Length: 65
Length: 421
Image 1 (cartoon, each protein chain N blue to C red):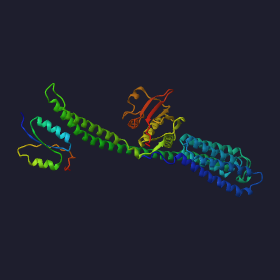
Image 2 (cartoon, each protein chain N blue to C red):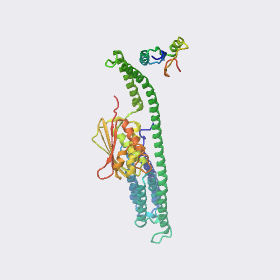
Image 3 (cartoon, each protein chain N blue to C red):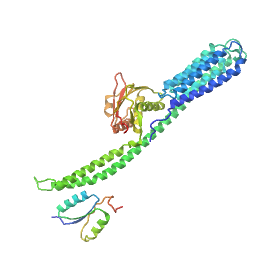
Image 4 (cartoon, chains in turn yellow, blue):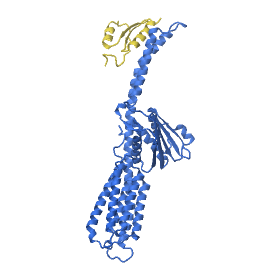
């Protein structure tokens, strides 16, 4: 069993976020989803320093320039 | 953007100017005849000369009217008008002192016009004919004693002979140098047109490349989503792998998105139709060949349009004209004489360009239309490739094969885009 990680997925495409989150959850990871920059920052604040976060974002995510 | 066709073709403009020159010449002659007539001795063919001027004026008015009628004026027709000038001038001179008449130097006018506007062979033909008429007029004419230079004693006058020799040298110089200058100008014009085409092509390529990059980015997300869903399904136990109802719907939407993106790319690669207006097919082809003849006056191009074809109109992308000019250039490079035949229905246009050159070898045939291959020693083969791809992008096809009886037959089929009502 690999190490359990916390993921924050940020993308404006809900279908992609859901599919990726499901794959990660199947691997027993913890996943949070955000569709824009504000929500992403709000979710990231709740993450502990020890946790790792991997952010996938596209240039078109609302709030990102 | 390339202008689809010039409002006034060069040949038409040339003929219009020629008729203006004639009006000026005829007017001057009329004045001269009125002023000098009474001074001339009895027996001069004054009435006959006046009648001839009248006839020429009528003929010139007809030629002027010709410039307003739609059929394009070919090089051969313009040549015919210049022959008429030489014939008319010769008649006038025959009855008015022949080579002793100072008016004889007017022969240089048609020679110069021919050198500036016609191909090499035809302009030399005009010069040779003018010289021949001049030479005949040294011997055969109805004399007007008042016109003969002094010290006349029966035979050929040295002054008249000197003028004749001078004419020969002048005509040769004009024929050679003026023709070269006009040729240089035509060449430059051709290069400018080519550069404009290349620029248009580059702009189009750049915009397509930008769009392609955007499309690739847009395709990334739905493809990733589908990949994840499929991997998810594959991760299930063997024999029970299946996609959930909801996942199928997601997959379906992702596929739609991919298709939409690709459609958008294809649409963007073609110039918007609303930016163009429909043109009658017949006029389009006539103008297209007319414009091409200006660039390649040395090539004898015969255009045959099927008279039974419908009077339909269609939208022609500006790139089509360049592509067709390119194919015509190819044919003209292979032989000095080409024939172009076209017929069309409401839906499709077929053009056959036939040259009488060496034709296509079996090895060349395989590589035709590919970049980097050329039948010409200095060509890159790019022209043919671009013509192929332009015609292909508009749903048409270019086919080259050996014609019966030698030469190459280039067959172009192009679906016609009719204007929406």
